[in-house]
Image (cartoon, rainbow, N blue to C red; front, side):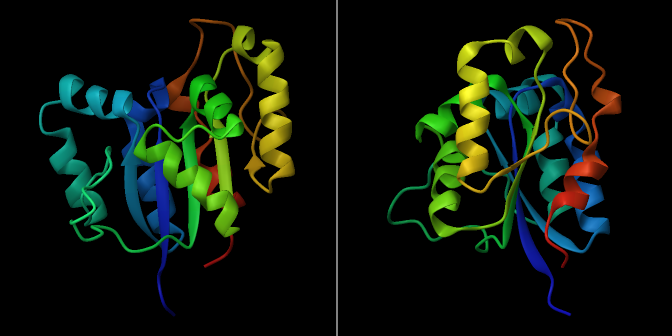
Length: 181
């Protein structure tokens, strides 16, 4: 059986501090995981945990990407067979739905819709953000584009601001929603 490649795109939300849990869950399900961080998530990994990027590189066996490469540079990662955006923040979900591609992470997930890759998004937002009028439209747009957004029953259930529990983030549900390898 050939191992398939999963791009795990992580945003700066509390569950990103435990991204190794998501990586291992995907690896246990048979995925070769490549980690892409938003610029803010990369900053968290660099500034919050000394050596964290090296540990994540060792865990995945691939460079941890967070910015666009130069046109003259070869691709550092194999092409993806599927993409998991987790944790997906309010900002990223809204920018993605609007077609904004101002970071590597957004560029990859925006392009993935057009490539018709299987995409799963597991938000990490609070109840106040979930009530913003743009958010509901963004989720509807992403779902209409074929993105599996795990929000609500059976996925991520928002909590009031400041009451999130990153250790209870449902990585297993996100990995289970990916296509079978």
